Image (cartoon, rainbow, N blue to C red; front, side, top):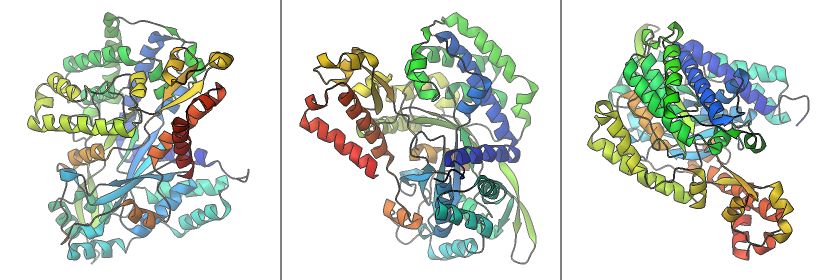
Length: 562
């Protein structure tokens, strides 16, 4: 790239920083939720500094760690969707995975989606849905399409900047800032302006609230902009306490339980997973500390006092409450991701009618999600996760109120469903349920002349190889659908077309005019590449065996061709 052009990842960071500021101004509860998250993350770091002597996070470092964002937008037409893909490409973000939200049983919605992110070590991601109008009966389909055809989300200036970036493979900073301004001031901005109140009402009444949110508004407004957290259970309890949904005694009990669990699980693998700026060498210098159960109490008291300050009196802000339970794996099962949210806010909207009159109404769509990311699973790991989740969901459906009535019993039952999963990274790797990255140590390289065995876990035990888990960087459609359902106060909707359409990845790739990256090939390829490098550095590549070597080389080739 021309050295005069802005760095695309720096552009991406600036875009999401400004989107976060924009969303905070639009939704004060979101801004306060970020502060709650910072308070919780700060406390977790204080705890970690006692568990790992030498660990420390400055405010700037913690802000950077907490600055990661995952957003969600909903798009109405294939032409708009193609422009969105071209826009995110300017910021080094590619489409990853195909999510068919029309085919997830009772949680189905009339959308398909992909997620835009950078391929390696992504800091930010956008889950981008496309409304599939042929999911509807012909009359509704036509009404939606005709309404969407009258809006122009991308200005001529924005289109010109995107085209310029494509032609010259980058933008100067002046142009980059101009494009970011288009995103903030127009493309993703909430205006509170909508069209066709009658169609809006009919779609909502029929259960198609997501379709109404897409079809009747002027922009691709953000539905949420999710921060990551270091301890999701501490955050959710803190938010419920601040929002007035949990009293002090229950909050302190939940916080004590959560922190007791954290001191047992926050090992060096936890540090590698949650603090991308820390190297293995830095972590290796930390000395092992110790916290006994009684020492948790002052941490909880300190957190309680901070959350009671006037700046976190969230109960005084407009809100619709917090979700009843967290989506994803059970606490203590460190795979994929866990998600939760405060529920969507009801906001004033002005509908413009065809005769120029205005209808004042309200709209409920924008919510405040939180997430904590864990390890990417192999195909066998994902299969096990899906089986455990189905069992957990069945147990919850059999007693849907237990989370409110007896949260401890609810947690125990949910955890029981995930009991087949190992709870530590070494076990997950050894059972080939999660992906890892492996590196030869200096000790291993020094000993390579005497090495004969190729068992990677024996090499790890001998300290000849180091490892880390690959973080899951993508989405879980059932978790997303569960959050949709809680925010819309409804589950999924059935197609009203004469015959329910079937969608696949090729349909979305044709709309995007580009290939969708398969992240599973990336995870497998990164692991394979690291293993091939390890065996090469340790002089063991020729001892690996043709079958194993071919498998690794094929996984690497598939990743590079992806």
